[in-house]
Length: 115
Image (cartoon, rainbow, N blue to C red; front, side, top):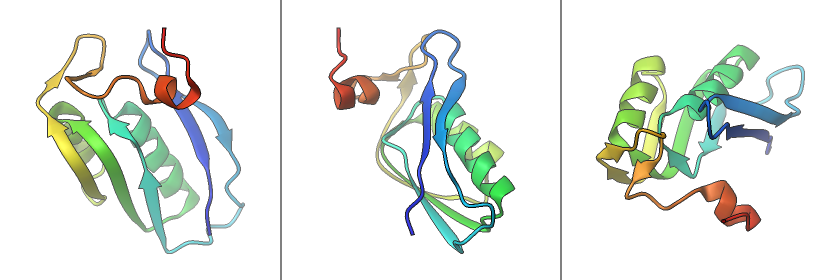
């Protein structure tokens, strides 16, 4: 089954914002595979993992294209039981919470809102 939790990170506060969540009332999955394009600070992925655990999922895997080293450290500190697969890890996280060099803003790329 496929379920969707829609979140984005506020660009100023870096706080995760949920814009869509329609999980069934009762957990119907033994494993959740979470697709997260980029893990910068890990605030958004940690919030999504909290939601899934509160829903009752016992086993979670995260797949990401790229992550900042600091974001992975934050994710592992908050959710050491979650299996994480990442294509590439960049060492630097900017003061504004972006992966350096990174890929740019995935949401902007996806929705064509690059300025």
